[in-house]
Length: 227
Image 1 (cartoon, rainbow, N blue to C red):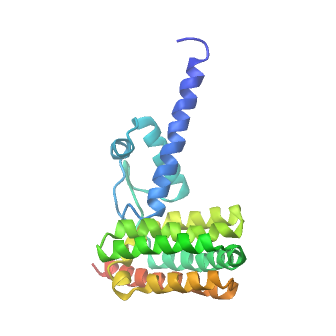
Image 2: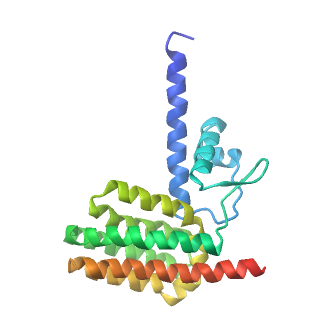
Image 3: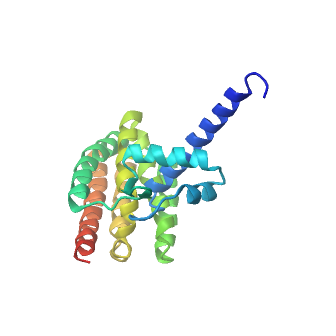
Protein backbone atom coordinates (compact mmCIF):
# COMPACT_ATOMS: atom_id res chain seq x y z
CA UNK A 1 0.00 0.00 0.00
CA UNK A 2 1.42 3.38 -1.00
CA UNK A 3 2.01 6.12 1.53
CA UNK A 4 -1.26 7.90 2.24
CA UNK A 5 -3.51 5.17 0.83
CA UNK A 6 -4.46 4.00 4.32
CA UNK A 7 -5.66 7.46 5.27
CA UNK A 8 -7.57 7.65 1.99
CA UNK A 9 -9.35 4.39 2.71
CA UNK A 10 -10.20 5.60 6.20
CA UNK A 11 -11.72 8.77 4.77
CA UNK A 12 -13.67 6.74 2.24
CA UNK A 13 -15.04 4.45 4.96
CA UNK A 14 -15.94 7.46 7.10
CA UNK A 15 -17.67 9.05 4.12
CA UNK A 16 -19.72 5.93 3.48
CA UNK A 17 -20.60 5.76 7.18
CA UNK A 18 -21.79 9.37 7.13
CA UNK A 19 -23.86 8.78 3.99
CA UNK A 20 -25.39 5.62 5.46
CA UNK A 21 -26.20 7.44 8.69
CA UNK A 22 -27.91 10.29 6.86
CA UNK A 23 -29.92 7.92 4.69
CA UNK A 24 -31.05 5.74 7.60
CA UNK A 25 -31.84 8.83 9.67
CA UNK A 26 -34.01 10.19 6.88
CA UNK A 27 -35.82 6.86 6.52
CA UNK A 28 -36.57 6.75 10.24
CA UNK A 29 -37.82 10.35 10.22
CA UNK A 30 -40.13 9.60 7.30
CA UNK A 31 -41.59 6.49 8.94
CA UNK A 32 -40.13 3.89 6.59
CA UNK A 33 -39.50 1.53 9.53
CA UNK A 34 -42.28 0.70 11.97
CA UNK A 35 -41.81 0.55 15.76
CA UNK A 36 -40.34 -2.80 16.76
CA UNK A 37 -38.59 -3.31 13.43
CA UNK A 38 -35.39 -5.32 13.91
CA UNK A 39 -32.40 -3.50 12.43
CA UNK A 40 -29.46 -5.69 11.45
CA UNK A 41 -26.11 -4.75 9.96
CA UNK A 42 -26.64 -7.18 7.11
CA UNK A 43 -30.07 -5.76 6.24
CA UNK A 44 -28.84 -2.16 6.28
CA UNK A 45 -25.81 -3.08 4.17
CA UNK A 46 -28.02 -4.82 1.59
CA UNK A 47 -30.59 -2.03 1.50
CA UNK A 48 -27.97 0.67 0.92
CA UNK A 49 -25.58 -1.40 -1.19
CA UNK A 50 -22.64 -0.91 1.15
CA UNK A 51 -20.33 -3.08 3.25
CA UNK A 52 -20.94 -4.03 6.86
CA UNK A 53 -18.50 -1.45 8.30
CA UNK A 54 -20.37 1.75 7.31
CA UNK A 55 -23.69 -0.01 8.01
CA UNK A 56 -22.55 -0.84 11.54
CA UNK A 57 -21.28 2.73 12.00
CA UNK A 58 -24.67 4.14 10.98
CA UNK A 59 -26.53 1.86 13.38
CA UNK A 60 -24.21 2.76 16.27
CA UNK A 61 -24.70 6.46 15.64
CA UNK A 62 -28.47 6.05 15.53
CA UNK A 63 -28.33 4.18 18.83
CA UNK A 64 -26.47 7.16 20.23
CA UNK A 65 -29.25 9.42 18.94
CA UNK A 66 -31.87 7.29 20.70
CA UNK A 67 -33.45 6.45 17.33
CA UNK A 68 -32.56 2.76 17.79
CA UNK A 69 -32.25 0.74 20.98
CA UNK A 70 -30.92 -2.62 22.14
CA UNK A 71 -33.69 -5.12 22.80
CA UNK A 72 -31.16 -7.82 23.65
CA UNK A 73 -27.39 -8.35 23.72
CA UNK A 74 -27.16 -8.32 19.91
CA UNK A 75 -30.64 -7.22 18.88
CA UNK A 76 -31.27 -3.64 17.76
CA UNK A 77 -34.81 -2.42 17.09
CA UNK A 78 -36.77 0.71 16.34
CA UNK A 79 -38.16 1.67 19.77
CA UNK A 80 -41.84 1.40 20.61
CA UNK A 81 -42.69 4.68 22.30
CA UNK A 82 -44.81 4.65 25.44
CA UNK A 83 -47.71 7.01 25.99
CA UNK A 84 -45.48 9.08 28.30
CA UNK A 85 -42.80 9.29 25.57
CA UNK A 86 -45.36 10.43 23.02
CA UNK A 87 -46.75 13.08 25.36
CA UNK A 88 -43.34 14.54 26.11
CA UNK A 89 -42.29 14.61 22.45
CA UNK A 90 -45.62 16.20 21.51
CA UNK A 91 -45.25 18.98 24.10
CA UNK A 92 -41.82 19.87 22.76
CA UNK A 93 -42.98 19.61 19.15
CA UNK A 94 -45.82 22.03 19.82
CA UNK A 95 -43.37 24.59 21.17
CA UNK A 96 -40.65 24.23 18.53
CA UNK A 97 -42.72 23.53 15.43
CA UNK A 98 -45.23 26.19 16.40
CA UNK A 99 -42.39 28.72 16.67
CA UNK A 100 -40.91 27.68 13.32
CA UNK A 101 -44.29 27.94 11.59
CA UNK A 102 -45.04 31.35 13.07
CA UNK A 103 -41.63 32.70 12.03
CA UNK A 104 -42.05 31.22 8.54
CA UNK A 105 -45.33 32.99 7.83
CA UNK A 106 -43.73 36.14 6.39
CA UNK A 107 -41.31 34.23 4.15
CA UNK A 108 -43.72 32.33 1.93
CA UNK A 109 -44.08 33.01 -1.79
CA UNK A 110 -46.40 31.94 -4.59
CA UNK A 111 -43.82 29.33 -5.51
CA UNK A 112 -43.83 28.03 -1.92
CA UNK A 113 -47.61 27.69 -1.95
CA UNK A 114 -47.44 25.92 -5.31
CA UNK A 115 -44.80 23.50 -4.00
CA UNK A 116 -46.85 22.74 -0.90
CA UNK A 117 -49.92 22.18 -3.04
CA UNK A 118 -48.09 19.61 -5.17
CA UNK A 119 -46.78 17.88 -2.05
CA UNK A 120 -50.31 17.71 -0.68
CA UNK A 121 -51.57 16.24 -3.95
CA UNK A 122 -48.95 13.51 -3.60
CA UNK A 123 -50.06 12.88 -0.01
CA UNK A 124 -53.71 12.68 -1.06
CA UNK A 125 -52.96 10.25 -3.88
CA UNK A 126 -50.95 8.03 -1.54
CA UNK A 127 -53.75 8.02 1.02
CA UNK A 128 -56.28 6.98 -1.62
CA UNK A 129 -54.00 4.10 -2.59
CA UNK A 130 -53.44 3.27 1.11
CA UNK A 131 -49.73 3.71 0.47
CA UNK A 132 -48.99 5.12 3.90
CA UNK A 133 -45.21 4.90 3.60
CA UNK A 134 -45.34 7.26 0.62
CA UNK A 135 -47.83 9.52 2.40
CA UNK A 136 -45.44 9.84 5.35
CA UNK A 137 -42.55 10.55 3.00
CA UNK A 138 -44.33 13.56 1.50
CA UNK A 139 -45.78 14.60 4.85
CA UNK A 140 -42.29 15.18 6.23
CA UNK A 141 -41.38 17.23 3.17
CA UNK A 142 -44.53 19.35 3.58
CA UNK A 143 -43.76 20.20 7.21
CA UNK A 144 -40.07 20.92 6.77
CA UNK A 145 -40.66 22.98 3.61
CA UNK A 146 -42.46 25.40 5.92
CA UNK A 147 -40.11 25.13 8.91
CA UNK A 148 -37.04 25.88 6.79
CA UNK A 149 -38.62 29.16 5.71
CA UNK A 150 -38.08 30.46 9.24
CA UNK A 151 -34.36 30.71 8.48
CA UNK A 152 -33.42 29.18 11.84
CA UNK A 153 -31.24 26.13 11.04
CA UNK A 154 -30.59 25.20 14.69
CA UNK A 155 -34.33 25.20 15.38
CA UNK A 156 -34.93 23.04 12.31
CA UNK A 157 -32.24 20.61 13.51
CA UNK A 158 -33.92 20.33 16.92
CA UNK A 159 -37.26 19.62 15.26
CA UNK A 160 -35.60 16.99 13.08
CA UNK A 161 -34.28 15.32 16.24
CA UNK A 162 -37.82 15.03 17.56
CA UNK A 163 -39.05 13.56 14.29
CA UNK A 164 -36.23 11.04 14.43
CA UNK A 165 -37.77 9.76 17.66
CA UNK A 166 -41.42 9.89 16.65
CA UNK A 167 -41.16 9.23 12.90
CA UNK A 168 -41.56 5.43 13.05
CA UNK A 169 -44.63 5.78 15.31
CA UNK A 170 -46.37 7.96 12.73
CA UNK A 171 -47.16 4.79 10.79
CA UNK A 172 -49.68 4.05 13.57
CA UNK A 173 -51.71 7.08 12.46
CA UNK A 174 -53.21 5.01 9.68
CA UNK A 175 -55.77 4.11 8.52
CA UNK A 176 -57.68 6.39 10.94
CA UNK A 177 -55.82 9.57 10.00
CA UNK A 178 -56.48 8.92 6.32
CA UNK A 179 -60.15 8.07 6.75
CA UNK A 180 -60.89 11.12 8.90
CA UNK A 181 -58.66 13.39 6.77
CA UNK A 182 -57.28 15.14 9.84
CA UNK A 183 -53.92 15.87 8.25
CA UNK A 184 -55.43 16.92 4.92
CA UNK A 185 -57.59 19.55 6.61
CA UNK A 186 -54.72 20.86 8.75
CA UNK A 187 -52.42 21.14 5.76
CA UNK A 188 -55.07 23.02 3.78
CA UNK A 189 -55.41 25.48 6.67
CA UNK A 190 -51.62 25.85 6.76
CA UNK A 191 -51.43 26.70 3.06
CA UNK A 192 -54.21 29.24 3.42
CA UNK A 193 -52.50 30.86 6.42
CA UNK A 194 -49.15 30.99 4.62
CA UNK A 195 -50.76 32.61 1.59
CA UNK A 196 -52.21 35.26 3.92
CA UNK A 197 -48.92 35.62 5.86
CA UNK A 198 -50.85 34.98 9.05
CA UNK A 199 -48.32 33.72 11.60
CA UNK A 200 -50.85 32.93 14.33
CA UNK A 201 -53.04 30.95 11.95
CA UNK A 202 -50.09 29.08 10.49
CA UNK A 203 -48.90 28.15 13.95
CA UNK A 204 -52.41 27.03 14.89
CA UNK A 205 -52.67 24.82 11.78
CA UNK A 206 -49.47 22.95 12.59
CA UNK A 207 -50.28 22.71 16.28
CA UNK A 208 -53.66 21.22 15.37
CA UNK A 209 -51.92 18.69 13.12
CA UNK A 210 -49.57 17.69 15.94
CA UNK A 211 -52.39 17.41 18.49
CA UNK A 212 -54.59 15.36 16.15
CA UNK A 213 -51.65 13.05 15.51
CA UNK A 214 -50.94 12.68 19.20
CA UNK A 215 -54.52 11.65 19.96
CA UNK A 216 -54.37 8.94 17.29
CA UNK A 217 -50.96 7.73 18.43
CA UNK A 218 -52.11 7.67 22.06
CA UNK A 219 -55.04 5.45 21.13
CA UNK A 220 -52.69 3.13 19.25
CA UNK A 221 -50.30 3.01 22.22
CA UNK A 222 -53.14 2.12 24.60
CA UNK A 223 -54.37 -0.59 22.25
CA UNK A 224 -50.89 -2.09 21.93
CA UNK A 225 -50.46 -2.00 25.69
CA UNK A 226 -53.58 -4.14 26.13
CA UNK A 227 -52.41 -6.72 23.61
